[in-house]
Length: 352
Image (cartoon, helix red, strand yellow):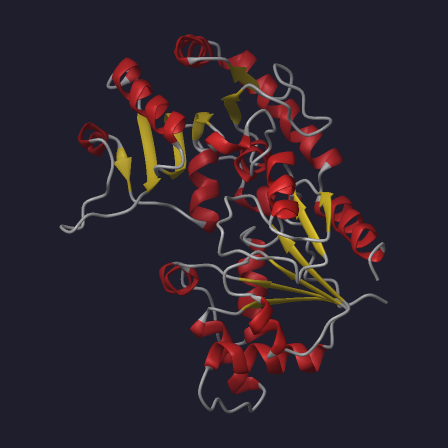
C-alpha cells in the first residue's frame, strides 16, 4: 500500500465554489463534485482510490468544512494548522504538490514528515524557488524538467497529463455555436499567443463568431490589460464545467503553448479539447506519444498558416469532425485516468 496526498493550491477556488454552487455540506462531497468537473484529475490522481487524498490547502471554504467535520479548532494559522492535522491523520508516504512558492524548506519543517516529497511544474520558476528539499519533480515537457533540476530537485520524471473520460461524457455533445474560441491567459509570458489572438481577431471577425474567454491582469480602473479591440470578442473567464462546455460548443479551439515551452508541446488544453471531442488547431512541435498532428488535431507553423487553416476547417465540417472524433478516441485509449494513475504509482514507487 502506498498512500499519496496531493496538496494543491487554486487561487480562485473559493470564488468558483460559490459561483458554481458546489455543495459544501460535506467535505468529501465537495471534493468529489470538483473532481467530476475535471479540476484535479489531469495529473493522474483518482480520488476514488482510498490511498489517495486531496487537500486544497488555500481554500478557506473546504478547509473550514474539514475542520468542522473533524472537530479541529484553529489557533492562529488556519492554512498551516489544518493542513498539518490532515497530513498527520492520513500519514501519506508521498507528498505531492503543484506549489513551490508555499511549500518551502521552512514550511516542511512545520509539517509531519513523508518519505517522498514530489512536485509538479509546468510554469516558470524564479530564483526564490530553491527546491532541493524535493525528492522528485514531474512535468510533461523537457524545458520544465530542466528547470526543476536547475533549482535543485534531486530527480525528475516525465509525466503526461491524464483525462477522466466520464467527465467529458457527462458534459455531453454541445451544439457548435462558436466558430473559434480560446479560453486561457492573456499575459506577458505569452507574447506569441497574444499576437496571434490579435491577428485572428483582425482577419476573421466579424465574418466568424470569435469568442475569447481571457484571464488577464487588471488595471487601476478594473479593465483587463488586453488589446482594446479585443473587448469586442472577450467574455468573462470560464472554469470547471463551464470551460468544458465552451470548448465543446466550439467548432475550432485555438491553442498556443507558452513561449518558454519551446518544441515540447502537450499543455492541459490539448487534453481538454480532445477530451470533449472538439477540433484543435495548435502550434507545431513535439506532442505526447500517440497523439498525431493532422490525424488527431491540426497544427500551424506561422500566422498565415493559422489563418488559412482556420478558414479551411471552418468550411470543411466533415473533415474537421472526423479529426476531432479520432483525437478523442486516441486520448481515451492512451491517456485515461486509469492509465495515468498507474503510471504515477509506478513513478512514485521507484523513490520509496
